[in-house]
Length: 305
Image 1 (tube, one colour):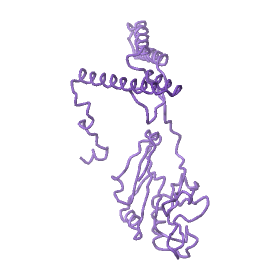
Image 2: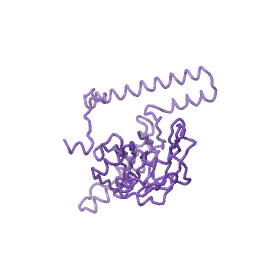
Image 3: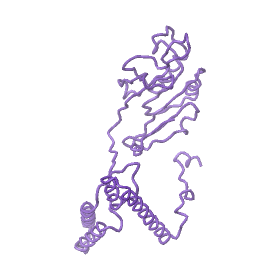
Image 4: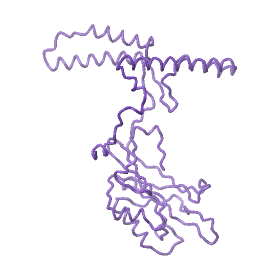
């Protein structure tokens, strides 16, 4: 199981069963500066099935930044309480070498698996392997955060190229005074442009840039910045904002009822307008229901089909 923060949606994370299809291997891809990278979580049982699967299939995964998980292998290479170097440990090292990975060292070497059985010692069976670009990165073992599990979480920070993930954008509220000002400004400025001289590519280029400046200037003068969050609602407006501010200031029940009434009427008005727009524009009310729309296949499945 993997959890991806919604703020990272720009990196286009995807589950990649098309590359590795195994019930104990979770392979994720993401894009950073238009280059595809991979992260892989592994659970290898006491028969080392996942490791054997990867070695038998000879699956090459380019730009693999991370491989980690519970490998169920005690070996002297990473567990000081073990004196032997097992064939399973060597197979895991061979797999990491084939994938271009090196074993990450912990900041503080402590056990990762804590046994509740008397006579069974704690051990190191959870490991992290990183790509060559992250070879010097250390990971942390957090035994205090393991309850109720018998495995301690492993935490690592992976450096990637800087990516502009924008949490805000400029918007113009529909049917507002600002939208009317924007349209009026663009209309007036476009009328003032000279469209009569288009004798060369240079003239066309200059006119295109002038049109772009007119629209950009009007947009920046009238649009406002909003912060996009998981709780952002398209129907929210200034009336809702003012009603909520009034309730928070007074705490009065009647103001809470007024806030609820305002948001309810705003939602009704917003969705009534959307329904009317869809029905009158494309005459297709079925577009209001998401499950009847055409399903876009992933790129790989589209190629298969």
